[in-house]
Image (cartoon, rainbow, N blue to C red):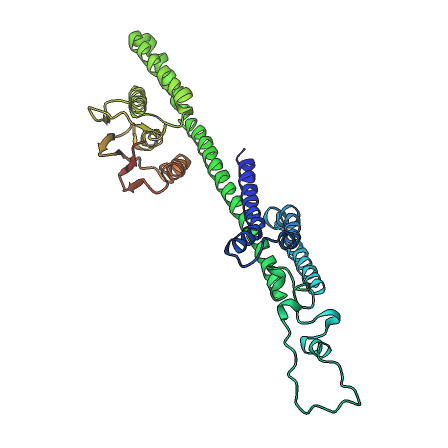
Length: 384
């Protein structure tokens, strides 16, 4: 749809330029007739149109057949070879079709013509007149009136029409490249958006399936120990899954909904751990009616539970969300498990970085501090 719109705009530009060019001789004749310098001469206009028609035909051939070879198919050698042949053919035509500007009939120069217009030879019986008669004045404007070339391109040096032809072809290429670049930019933006959606779908399923399995196991154990708590846990799990399935497919969600999702996630994860694990979640008392991309913070929180909780010793996870002006500041700190070859974050963290770059470009900050016993994430993004 956008490509056809670009083609219509490109065609409109060409039509406007050629309409102006073909109207120029008419306007020029009207102006000259209005000033009293000459009468309006349609024959002169038609002569100009005849010459412009040659350029117009070459333009049509170049626009529809030659230019696409370079702009869309990248066949540079074939394009420049054909264009070079066109320019050479045009130059030959230009030189062979130009009338003899400096000569009259038969190509004779003006001084030769003047000799034939001189006085007749003297009679042999007439006494010679020693007074030299001046040559008769010749009105060159009258002499060239019937043989003068039409006004405009053909009245100039032979190289000028060739230069104009090359400039015309270059303008055609430039306009086509402009619209192609604009189309490619829109296509790239569309691909980035599509890539963003695909990454979002991927991130949506990055929530560890073991989380759901372990939560179901915990619920199974609670059924006999605390049935009421098991019911509440099932309800929280259903809310979490509903958010992932439905809200996660949207481009943006309300900040309040994203915080509720984080709170439910942390609450379900707390069921699995003992009092040795300290888990806290801080949020503003009043939240603005702003939006954020869905499932943006969950990767950091999930990594905190995956890499920061130990069943053998005390550990902690602190999640905090602050509002600072028109920006949201997210902080996630957790203890680290002393495991060899532990890669905190992994693929999920790389994906969320790419996602942040696609959504916010450079208008975000992500600072990650990886110390011996503490892993600290600080993210600042603008509110949508």
